[in-house]
Image (cartoon, rainbow, N blue to C red):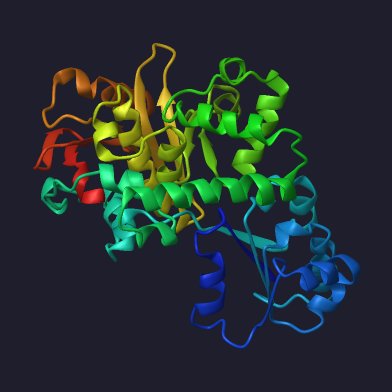
Length: 390
């Protein structure tokens, strides 16, 4: 493709990646965070593309620039000629997606997960779940705690902070910047106080099916406004709404969505979780464990375009926390915060296996729990310590 688009929330490291990645040296570089470049993009966007290859940073600040990109690549189609980065999901911005259709490949850079930050190839570890020869002994034993990875999240600046107070100041500043700057680049929001209240209400629903009418009522907003604000949060890479897995994609899209945050640290801060002691005493701690593991799974997903994350809930209310898909294969993943396993813990996974197993293509399933050892529990069913993911 002549255009490569790297997107993700602000502060995930897009600019650092675009400027330091081997092979990208010598490219012209412009960022629309600079007022003069932004002005040039609005007055004479073609001049920024006069010489290629070129990198344009924070392009969501001037969507009309993408029309100039279209003209440039239609005149000269050179693979990788234009690298764009942005803090908004350009594919969800209607005018942009239409402009670059058939011309761009989209890559998402989510926040780090804690294992990545420690140079552990956790994506490779998760990929083992799809290998035909998987055995319990392939999974490393670990009881690494999940609460600290949850509180720190994955934004690089936070990883260097040593105390809870510094983290709270950083997340407060990040939220303020998002509300006052990034959000206004995406849409006109008349009441930032209402929007911030919706963010906090959404954080309290992490890991659960999203009922927009209920959320709107609790946030004191009209339902259409709540819907628009949630769309803005998703466009700005703050939240992810997982779809219910089904063989019929259209059916899955119209069912309830499951709400997750792209960064667990920010979500926890918005929900009022300031330290590990607070987390331990919360009745919804199990949902935050799901959020921690989701942060790991989205790192795995971001490394290949054919990887997907869903959840599953049947009409009989059997549930599986996460469904991973790759190359047409499925893996069910249930999360359990206890170190022991009861028969009832496996009902959702077994129901999913029964529902979606095909001839000569069984569905593999894993129960991630707080125990020490990986265990084989039956055909295509294992229990694994979730600590290895952190």
